[in-house]
Amino acid sequence: MSNTVVTDYDIVFALHTGVTIMMQQQKDFDNSPDGELPFTVSEADSAVHIEAASGKTVIIDNIKSNMLAEIKGRAFFMIYEFDGEDMTRCTPCALKM
Image 1 (spheres, helix red, strand yellow):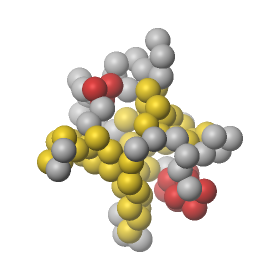
Image 2 (cartoon, helix red, strand yellow):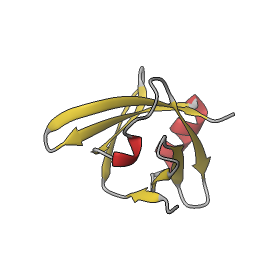
Image 3 (cartoon, rainbow, N blue to C red):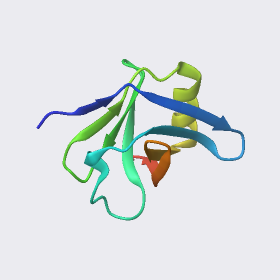
Image 4 (cartoon, helix red, strand yellow):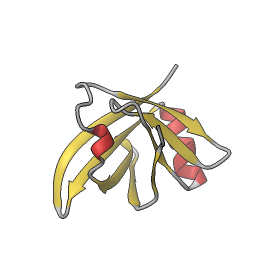
């Protein structure tokens, strides 16, 4: 099963809430259980690898090093998915231990 690589996204950082990644809706996140999606950090390719309910890994690639450090340090980030201009889903992601 191949992975999904996301390269078209925006990142927002706020001191209180941390990192939020905004992207177009991903089919691989459909049917995910309520709650947090587990992820790991790959510093080698400046990416986060998210385990999706589809069985695939969704890779958010080429994240700036300061944002990747915040994600790793907080062990948490949010994903906001959009269909055009409409936000369709908000999903918390937690570092896999």
